[in-house]
Image (cartoon, rainbow, N blue to C red; front, side, top):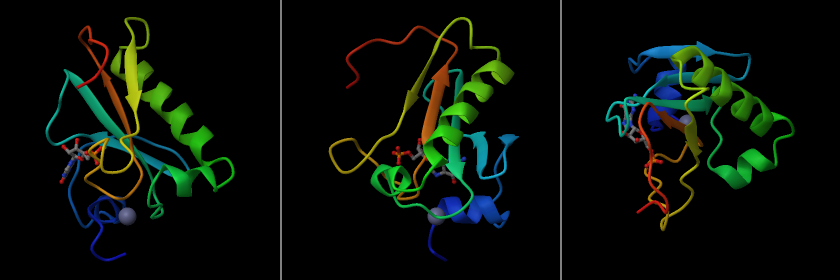
Length: 113
Ligand code: 5GP
Ligand code: ZN
């Protein structure tokens, strides 16, 4: 997947500010943060979207666990945080390498836009 931005980050070819790593995942700061804390958790390997991730046993559990660990490390686990998978066109997914957004550090409204 040479054209995938997040594969580039996973390989180190594209610079990013790392927050945490696990065996199969990487967490790094979003380049255009939508909250005081905005971190993306991705699988190191290219996985297209949530459907493909769901077919990979254990991967989503590791991503969700890592999302929580990011919240702990960033000091937002107690105040609360939001974890979002934008999936497909209506959700506005722009990078087609599955990623969980971890957002926090301010109160958030619901429903999302
Ligand atoms: P999506 O819209 O696909 O759910 O989210 C993609 C996210 O990737 C966006 O929040 C966007 O700001 C972030 N992003 C896009 N390009 C880069 C980049 O080069 N580096 C980092 N760290 N984040 C990026
Ligand atoms: Zn990729």
